[in-house]
Length: 129
Image (cartoon, rainbow, N blue to C red; front, side, top):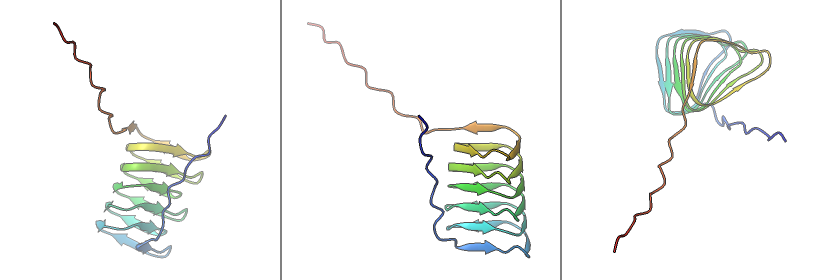
């Protein structure tokens, strides 16, 4: 039986690069970022990143959750979930906790999936005597 997949809530977007805008440089943010235009540079945020279907990014991303529907050339580090929509085109390496690739998305690169390690169960002590 298939489970319903959980989609992260991207909530309120704090920073938007519009469809007719091209930004060159590094973005460092605390909140969520949406790219519908062009970005040549890196993005680092404690929040989420959405690259819309008209978005194009040439740089690296480090965020909590990432949704890519546009084009990206660069590496992605996501502590949560990375979702590639069916319109996504990405070339680069991924390091994520969870990965969802929709049918039709194109990914060229390598992927490393990391889950937080669970502590090993305590071994019972043997008592002699």
